[in-house]
Length: 482
View 1 (cartoon, rainbow, N blue to C red):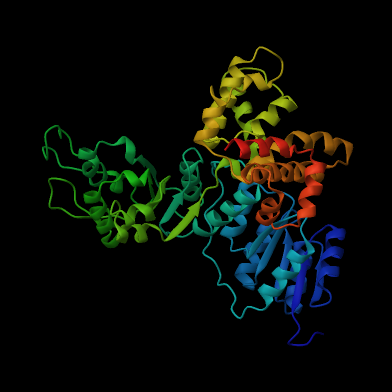
View 2 (view 1 turned 180 degrees about the horizontal axis):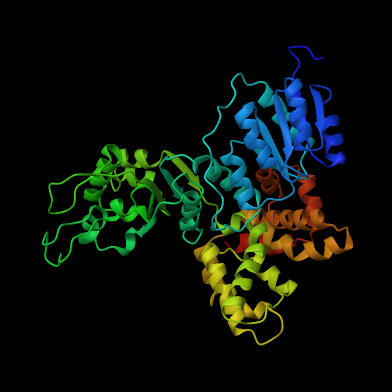
């Protein structure tokens, strides 16, 4: 028996080594119970008070997600789902079922301890969630298993089962409409319409009619009655893409629909009640537009109930190969072409590119490379990444992280194969040499000024000048010429 004040953690995993690792990590601060499958876990729960659960997804018999749903119904306990698989739907399903957190193996021991401490110290427990929508349907799929995308999947899983308005922010080409479709397909209205509309493609004078409908003869050219997008999406989701293109006068009418749930067609006094969820998307900074009086502040806060930022491809480069393989497979099937492997030097080229057009640009590059390749494999030449690299670099300046990545990636494969390397010395030394050269050039070879700017001792400057073979005379000549 355990004391009432002692916190109890249940670990459910069919891998004995995971059980041992978690037990060892938690034993000092918690009482730990172990189960190898869901049925053993429920036997423990029937006889023992438990404060939280760490549970694997894939186990013999009842899966972790099935067990999670039952635990929510019977015990309302916080559950952390563990898995070696990071696919989109697994993360979304876990969060839809109100999993407290979703972590991937291998994990850090400190992460496990921090989670257990934080969860068991909370006073309230989550309520039983609504019954999730059936998964017996064809889902859109977002490719990616990076940490950045797992966070996106978690947010989708949390917001999808609700009717909360969602604002998706991200650069062009990051897949905002795809995310909107995934939100809809994981919602309680998945069997109702999903109606996408690109505001940038609708003429301004037709927007009101497009959204609210019109009566026959309401204006020149209105030869038929039209329901409008809100009524077409009745009970489902209306996706407003390129939201920043909505004119101010229509913004006020959209705000009224969101507040009152009513629309009135152009040329009619009749009012229709609508129950439509809004998911909006933009690649512009709406808050900045609000400050410039280009977007209504009240509408912004009405739409920004739940915001979701999509990371650009350059921030999740670990997903690039998986996304590329997906597109190459898709188009090899569509065009009835043989699948071709991508040579390592081609992958290095793709990984060191900044991808201003994001996933959409990668899709076009993959399709073009597959169509134009004349060899049994895809080479660096099959992936043209811009006609003027210098102009591209000026237009899309690289961050320090991107610069370091571009220098490190070409060396990684060889060092991984060898099992060792000197990458730290190589990159840090290169960066340090460049920094010293830049400051010495600025000070025209004055070592005292260089030391003061860098915040180091003058002897350190002298040592680095010798180590990196920096010719001070070149910079001193410029000082004399000036």
